[in-house]
Length: 399
Image (cartoon, rainbow, N blue to C red; front, side):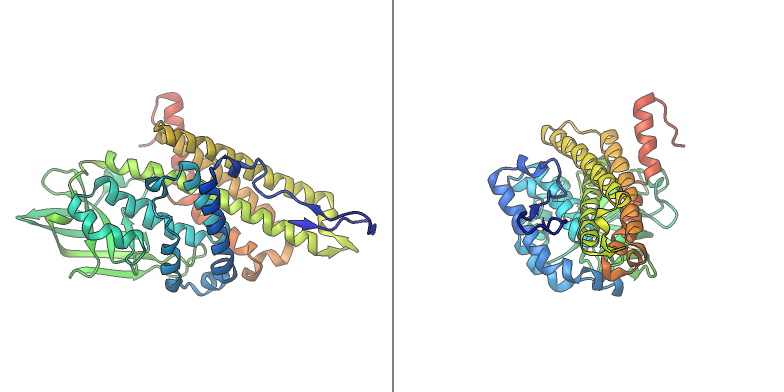
């Protein structure tokens, strides 16, 4: 970003301001990765950022964007030669443009498509993977239930009963992102005979599947969250994931997705910093730019510090992922820390913009509101803190 120097001296050249990536984490990528990230950045600048506010206000999902997004070729990037750091920066870049789009991407690619890779049979991958990776079809991750969120591992109420080569499923799921329109659900249910968790690729057009949109959200309004009712749904045995035997298998997916939410929180902070900086450089009060006031600079410095600390932590987590040494408590720490810093960052940005910080067309209000959902999903802040506390003390405080 270039800005003119104040002081009225025409001999002084405009200064190039540093980017929000203050430590230049992006320089750790190789040439191919930097080129692809630049392509994604240009794509969202043209196709996402100018329209995200309208989608959010209208609670509309941009279905026409999916073929173009699929053509970028960034589904499950680490399976195509990209690093875990690139994967994280990709999520941050999508979130910097629109947290709802980044959330859609994570649900579909990092949970549904990754599950096909990790737990699917050769037949399942042949039937579903190519279309899902190219976004010709979409998927969702159906774990949370109306009465069971943080305790779903012990309290899952959705049941599956085997009858020959078919499973009969009854129950309900809630807060299922992409759930109103996806062709397939990665559905989790308890086996009535064994008490173990089973995973299924569920065709949402099957008889007995009923979805309804959760209305009146104040956060991530573009994401289409659904209540899903399952009444006598018959799923063939060939659509069960044989690699799923317990909730521990689900934790493998949740650990990775929790890390990606940490990166999404980084993207939110980068967006908040950039929006506020552009605003205070342009807006004047008392005859001079807001950027020249000490309290505004203090807010910007705090926001940049929060974003930088979060980004540095997530980079170290990405390196642990590349070694295969990341742990659930590390993912929990990263998600909790980055989202708490995000909450402070977006609040500072909103406050600094005054009344303009509460209208959606200024971007900051949307960034501020979206932070609340990010702080909560993929493990609430409190639950993640307890996971870290258990690791630190050897004593579980979770009932």
